Length: 422
Ligand code: TMP
Ligand code: ZN
Image (tube, rainbow, N blue to C red; front, top):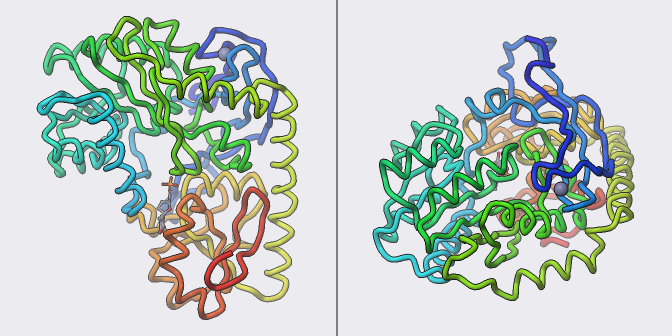
């Protein structure tokens, strides 16, 4: 199949309909970040798709330059929510927050878009709620069902919302954690959510926050699945166009810095909290509405693209053995965009079984279970899963006490020095 059938350029802003774009970065043609290959696959047929970002000057949505067909990206999906203590706690926290702040009665219907293996919904079920997942990845909906979470096996849409409403009634809470940024037709989703939510219902969306992305130079968050990088201004703009209203926002450290945005019916019972105008003020003050901020971001990315290969190559030249810690999708952006490969990294370790025994897209670096590193001990780990740094460093004290070192790629490549962390 030809690439042109599965990818299309973005022309108008999916949030505000504008077309006054600022070019931010262009990484050229890049393989899909979750396109893990089996070693037997023919690497010559591996497809690459254009990867770049633009910023809409009207609403300050940052968007990819191109959209890859979701059928290609999500029907068989390598990402499963990691078994991380930080994530488990975060999920519990979200459950508690939604329940208390928006007074969810027992037996409320909670619907989650992009419900993956159902872990977040399990927390709601334990709290006495009725739950329904929606996820297009066939390999994951089976796992979710085994976890006892009923899952509608499709992409969420206005049509799907009508079906759910007919079969299950209105939802008191619709959740979309780390899924909204993956959706092209956000207007259809907003219309669907409006249809599905009860009059006092709340839509809670968690996405990586663009302010953190810019300030941490977390350009590895940029890959084909992440079509949108939202500012608060873009959220307010989007929902106002669909009879909905942003009610509240919380910032969290997970996934490198995320926002949880609560949305309700425009004429619903929940007032807007001061957190909303406050974050809009912060965005203005930090320059999120100015071209110059995005130019600085692009320059910082270029610095990492120069310094990281230099650092790794100088270590390899000294005979050091470097291994990737984690094989997250974002690690593939770092590696491909920085032109790194098997010359620099011998392999990656990853706890996700679906990734083990496969190779990374683009670079074809093998992925092994963490145990592999006990026999093939690296001198350095490149911390590709940097968003879990605290728990990983805790887990790897023996490696560090034996002289092993961690390299963090962003905001500027650096080697963590002391065994107890720095
Ligand atoms: P994520 O940032 O998209 O959640 O991906 C993190 C990846 O890192 C995921 O593939 C699991 C992997 N990982 C490890 O290999 N070891 C760890 O200790 C943690 C926390 C994650
Ligand atoms: Zn816009």
